[in-house]
Amino acid sequence: MRRLHVITEGAILLAIFLVLMLFTNYAPIIGGILHFVLPLPFLLFAIRHKVTDALLLFFAGCILSLLIGSITNILLVLLFGLSGIVMGVFYKKQQPVGALIGGSLAYIINLLLGYIGAILFLKIDLIDDTVTMIEQSIAQSKSIFSNFNTNEDMTNQFKQLEEGIELIPTLSPTIFVGTAIFFAILTHIIAIPVLRRLRIKVPALRPFREWRLPQSIVWYYLIVSILLIFNPDKDTFYFMAVLNIYMILQAVILIQGYSFIYYYCYVKGISKAVPIIIVIVSLLMPLLLYLIRILGIIDISFPLRGKIAKR
Image: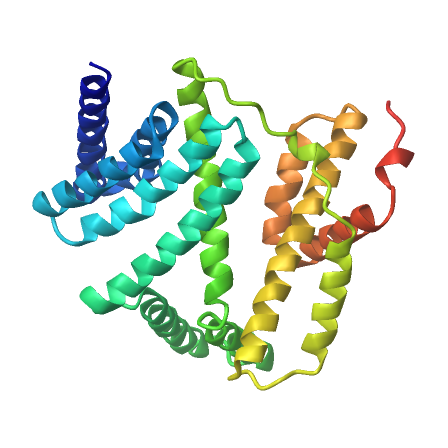
């Protein structure tokens, strides 16, 4: 009787997944949003049943997705199905932090497999195609602006932009990591209200304002920054590894800076809108972004929060 219940629930959740997948394929605007709902059927099934049953559901999803569409559907099942199962297993253990970490790792692996699969089976290299498209846009913009403005500052700006575009393939590991973490966070944000609606208890994450990174992060950042000063050959694996670690550490320290701003506003009783505005404005102003990173380093290195008195 229990086995029949497992099969019935699996069939229902799999049908929901396939319907959502069809929407993502044939309804571009709605589909872009529904991508982040795709892990939920597998996530819910992994919470309610054994991992082996969830994996069987995953394999059934792969077969059915291929029957009702193209090979790209398998890439969707691979990306969102396995990631949903991993996060569901951690939610079942009452470990939301583990769900975010495990989900991020699963998304990284699945994104890499999807990227390789797109190259092998679809002959599409998303990174190279993106770089080519951006370079063409820059070339068109340069030709347009050259008719109106030929000053040296404009030329230098285009040169810096072109140099930055050349680094995109080198920074592809950072792009994969950032995308995976973003996907895991969105999946968590969508999953928690659904789980609570279904009366599945999951402990709340620690508030963002209370996040504190270990002091060793600053030392890692300092060491990697020194390694970059030597300016190694940009075509070597050494440069690629050091640069990606540097960029990831920069992002981590930036998050710590934002956490301190949220903490300060909370302690001082400042409106919640203020830190949100600061985050948005800083993403548009590189100088402010730099100052927030410095704030993050100070917050990690010194007991700054203990010196802030409540209002």
